[in-house]
Length: 436
View 1 (cartoon, rainbow, N blue to C red):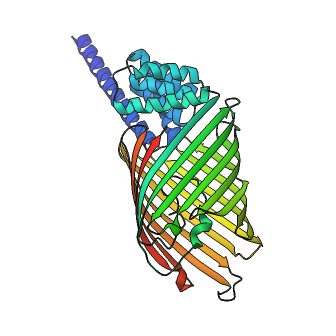
View 2 (cartoon, rainbow, N blue to C red; view 1 turned 180 degrees about the vertical axis):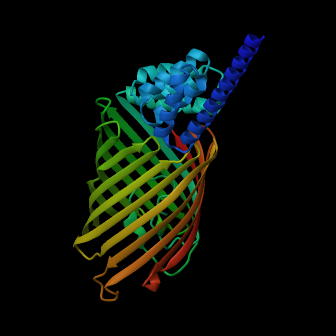
View 3 (cartoon, rainbow, N blue to C red; view 1 turned 180 degrees about the horizontal axis):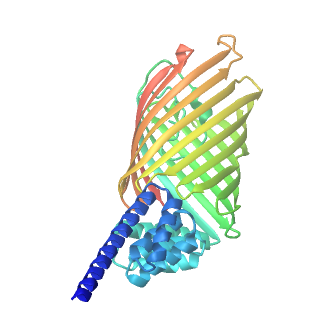
């Protein structure tokens, strides 16, 4: 009898010990998951790896072990972890997707392509299929020697003060056009509202010499017609060739040239050409840093100037819905000949893009320009100081993967030590964007 009681007691103690062990493992799992959600990926990897050593086949532990390894760019370890999940559940679509993403990051594009195509034939949500298609398009461009992408913009703009140009109201809807020097054209104290239509076409050609070296040709043409004041019409043509070199998995450099031609009211106004090297550094899987240099020679009327600029960009993906962006620029223009002015500018911008739904993204933005002009004209003070403030709210709706609708509201105020250069304005811009 005493022997049976002893066995029951031992069994009960062991049972409690096992329950305590399971409870502790669940607690450790939750703590490791919290570390991952707090983006402490090295700590979460260490904790999940410790749990993995005592429970080799647990699919949840292996899944987050794989996710932690991916965020640390240890793609080989991530693949091994996801494959162990598939050993437990061969139908885990998420694990297969993660393996395909790892192959993509490892530049094993054929393996990634095969797996993405296989997953795309499964019964998966529409947004997942669209993400897979984005990866497949990227893989096609990597595998092809030649690739050509294009986008077209058709828009309408209402401006409460067309006679005064803000720094970025010339080219609404597409980026990477440098028209800072137009901000002082035809400025006046008179407010005059106007409606304009704008069209733009962007062509991006790429030839891959190897997986690390490519030659790029980027072309942009743009036209803006103001009704009824055609003296404010503007047109632009820009061409930028570049040798793009991936120096390692983190550093991409575009050794670029840039050529611009600008017309005002159908008449040639400005020509610019120069060098524009761009350096991009992948700090982490969520953060990209950019540092750009620009030197240009500008010819306008009978004057010639040299332009130098330094640009810094920071893009951080906070999560799948929220992207943060910071931009700053120091711009200096020096007169070489003719009757013109010296011009300095400092520019800072901060924006956030929030994907409210898979189809709709909202982007608020604030921007500040500080401009200093050195005048020769005796009717002006020696120095003109302007401060321009911009606030905008933009929304983009993706009707399909290749058709987007954009609506943007902007408020701009310019303060100056010269009263004739002070102004404020509001703009509403709508664009239809077609991607090819």
